Length: 598
Image (cartoon, rainbow, N blue to C red):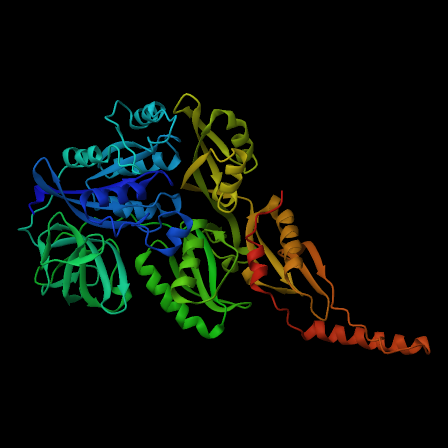
């Protein structure tokens, strides 16, 4: 098919605004999926996506569609909507020339709608605004259209559709063909393909997902990856229809996959450029803006002999999700494991669940922390994402913490509730702008640590579910931070250490000690749980010893006999406390992730 008949586009929107439903409807309209094969959320084929009702991984599909008597090839990439998976959206947009920007008629423009629209503008893509869910009774799409026009800065030709009933979907597909330009590139030039994703197949090795920018690639060609220079023979090329289907070649402008029998997971890097082996000089494609993980935690195998299995599972998962990083770590309490970095809290939860489901391993997770910077007394600046790595207090001159730029969209009746919530988190207030008759967008600067854990749930509770938020890390600012150590039976437990603001340290330490007291089972000796800053104890809780009635067999007689038995028991408990080990269950670590009581 000629390049002029190809359209590469993506669907972007706020979470739960109907991206996957519209993608499913387009599959049916083009005949890519038959009525017999069709089921709800065809694109979301991961069990976790079906259960949670969210898209986690971007998906690609090629469809042939006849429009006004001519055949066109539509390459669609469905994308996630949650802020934690914005890196998946960015990767998808690099493979497209245009986007469908969906807005729910019942909810209007939301925080991620704004963020994704700006992302598309940054990539210089054609934006087609679409108002969805117009089949819902008593819904007036006028307000959503007005908000879209405000967002995009002018009158736009906004389309209306219902992916559920199919109303207006053909008009949307016609707009894709008429408004989105064909892809640039020349199939007569040397091969240049952008790696935008990859998966691992147990039988065929790494399957590379590629957007061909120039040239063409066939089975039997010998290609190389520019980052490593290693060459491989292509055993299969094809397109997604939506399942992988082999084709003789894929050429400039098309989206497809390449199988080269690559067994080493570290050979393939998202954003790399694929070219033919014999091509000596070729301009690498721009690739992707590097991401920066902001939430970190330790992942440890529940069984020590599962360490190698966990390493292989992380390698395999990294291939499909390069937005998290990991490196080997060791904890005195938990043994060998990995320190992992994520884009956000939901991303962290998803990675852990995928690890346990796809590998069958039981994984222990430590309390999360964010990335900080520390200026040392010798002028050196170091980055710390693990409390165990914090230098000695005598070497620290100043702490710096990440500051997030937060945008919140909510009905104007909840302005006071949102302001109060942000004030409690030491936020700096920015602009407040009306984007509709009764809805406002509020901007704040707030320490990322204060919104990383439980903030989203509290925002929803304060606004009865109507508020939405988006954030990005704006800068690092100096702050009065301390390392809070947790001591169990007098021994610091590195996996339970935390970094927090000095004025919150005592409250946080007290809460952590209380929760641990409930979670750590009783032993045969008393266990003190202490929270300390440096050498100063700021909170303490005690777990009482298991009481065994050693005098149960004493029926009457001299009281001194009972006293002798009790003294003997007391001495035994002292010796046991000195040499005994305290078993800290996984529930104790999970308890620290629980929402703090107000």
